Amino acid sequence: MGRAGFVAGNWKMHGSLARNQELLEAVVSGTRSLQNVSCAVCVPYPYIVQAQSVLEGSHVAWGGQNVSQYHHGAYTGEVSADMLTDLGCRYVIVGHSERRILFGEENRVVAEKFRAAQECSITPILCVGETLAQRESGEAEQVIATQLDVVIDLAGIETLRHSVIAYEPVWAIGTGKTATPQQAQDVHEFIRSRIAVHNSKIAGDIQILYGGSVKADNARELFAMPDIDGGLIGGASLVAAEFISICLAAQN
Ligand code: 13P
Image (cartoon, rainbow, N blue to C red; front, side, top):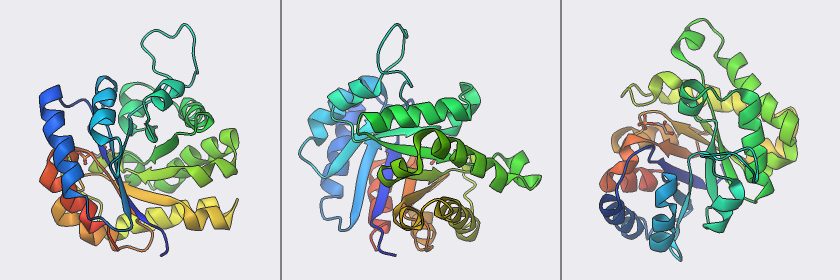
């Protein structure tokens, strides 16, 4: 549909210097021939320097999995967008459901993190998605609409020109239970229509990724849907061959 594909790995809290080195090198060499697809890995903070040293000059970008809403100051344990910029990060994940649910990040904080990344010219990958209970009670669209609206209200619709959205139904994350291509497509289309209310050009251009138990063997049918532009990959991004196959599946 004119949009290039994009596949990002979210390593979550996994890795070691030795394992990362092997994985990063394998991903660089396995994705060298990719056409019209970008790929990135979002690694734990301590390994960003390692990712930079292996990936610099390659076609694979790197990023963080979280960022502070503040730029500097007395915020023990936090990492700012300015610091991620310093380490060459092109992307940062904001509002992952694990941050929202396990660490109490509300929509407002997610929006502030989104804005902080934008202010440092880092492309935020904004995660949205409903829980199983919300889906079963028919609230999925309302939940996702609110997650988006709070960001648009705080950061402004124009900031979506330089951002990526990831639809990650909470019930599909790490469960092996993938949304069907049609279920995912319906939500992606809804997200695009919600953005189109503000700006139809941005709605048409923005990359919307699907995340939740994407594997080499289900990626192709998901990415074949018209509004699914790629994936945000958890577990399968830790296995080079799986991640490379998923990147290849995003070529159109
Ligand atoms: P899994 O691919 O392990 O289900 O994780 C998805 C995810 O949370 C990516 O951000």
